Every structure is written in structure tokens, then in C-alpha cells.
Length: 337
Image (cartoon, rainbow, N blue to C red; front, side, top):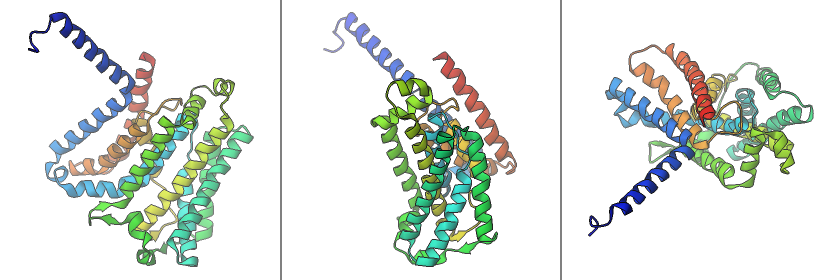
């Protein structure tokens, strides 16, 4: 019965399906590209080290470590889409971790210490926003300065010494933040997924998300359209500080110890995840899904490189190469589009 339909009908249906497919790939070009990169890297590591990458334990290990810089990358995505840059988040992460440690030992409350540290992070992010917006200073220069400032404050106040957080394990909030669900699934991975979902909703289903895209694409035109550009810019820096503080608390609780150097080493991974995920430095373009997948790819690289028999020295080389290649690739794709 179906085969008896006229040829013209099948031509119309085929044309419709091809048009729909082309429309889908044109709308989701960045997401499809990063998924292909993820699948390519995964297949490469499975072939190169099957005994490691066919075991579920390696993926539980990934889920325990990726969220610390993945949360930073998701938050930084909003900053970069807005056409700005923030390099202070590693130091804010460390300072917030110190504040959390001091507040916990003073109050014996994980919840109160978490609230205080996140508020401190929001305040540090807001300070970045005020300096950039009100004084009309370049965000790159300002956040380089505040990066050194908060790192210095942490070192001075802590005296360069760490402090234990083992007593936090007695708190009912500890398993909620970094516990293992079912004895295996790290809770911090669920936090990362929840934050990704919230930021995705803001960017794609809320007017404020459109304002972030408009501001990053052309701030002058955005002002003409009635967008409060200054408020948008201050918001993206403020939320960056808040999420950096939250990531710092999670990282400290995971190892139940605070180190004054907390946050150092996360910048390269975070930026690589953002750029690999398809968010260019020019602003106005980017997706949360791309950054989420980019974080997973970056998180897999170090273990994959070592499992394939290469030294850990290759890791930074690969990170740097990924940043350069991904920026160049998406720039070419943007010009063609």
C-alpha cells in the first residue's frame, strides 16, 4: 500500500527530510562538532588503552574530578558570551575555600560556612564587575590584577598553611555536596549537571539570556534595543565569583583539607573547556551544552594520555593545542556561516 504511493510524494518527503536535516545541523553546528570530538577522543582512548577505558571505575573517577573545573567553565561561558574575560576565578576559588575553612571551624556548621563563602565569592565577582563597568576598564587587565590580589590575600591570611576539614564529614551536608550516591556516583557531578541545566535555561529560555547574547554581539545595538548592558556585564562577573566560591568549597571538601594554593592549575583546563565547547573570545556566541561536553573531554585527556603510555608532560601541550585549534576552527566556521 505504501509502496504504491506516487513518486512525486516520495520526492516531496525526501526533500522535506533533507531540508529538516540541513536546518538541524545549521542550528546545532557547534553542538554536533563538539560531540564528534568527544566520540573521536573516546574511541581513541578505548583503542589505545582498552583495559582502562572499558572499566567503569575510570568514569567514576572522571565524575569526581571534572565538576571542580567544569562548574568554573560553565560559569565562565556566560562571561565569554558577554564579550568579556575573567582570569581571577582561580584566586577567588582559593580565597573562598579559606573563608569556608575559617567559618566552619568558627561555627562548626557546613551550611553556614558554605553560605558565607559563596557570598564572599559573589562580592569578589561584583567587585570585578564594578571596576570594569563603572571605571570602563578592560576586563582582562582588571581580572589579572584581582587574580594576584585574592591570591595574595589568601596567602597572607593563611600564612601559607593549610588546615584540615575532616570534621565536616560528620555534617549531613557533606554527603549531599561530595558524597557518593549508591556508593559510586559522586554527588558533585550532579551539582555540575544541575548548574548546567539552570544556566542553559537562563541562556535559552529567559529574556536575560538573550540580553547576554545581545551584549556580547554588539553592546551599542543592545543599548538601542533597551538592554541594560551595564547590569548584564556586572551580573556575569558576579555569578562567576559565586560559582568559583562554590567550586572551591566542593574541591576542599573532596580532599577534606584546605590548601592555600587551591584554584591554581584550574585556569588552563577551564578555558580549554570553554573554547573547545564552541564559545569564541569574540562574544555573542556559545552554548552551555558545548562547554559541558568540552569539560568532559578535557577531564578525560590527562588520564587518557597517561593510560596510553605517554608522560604527563604531554598534558599541557595538548591543552594548549586544543585551545589554539578550537579557536581557529570555530572562527573559520563562523566566517563561513
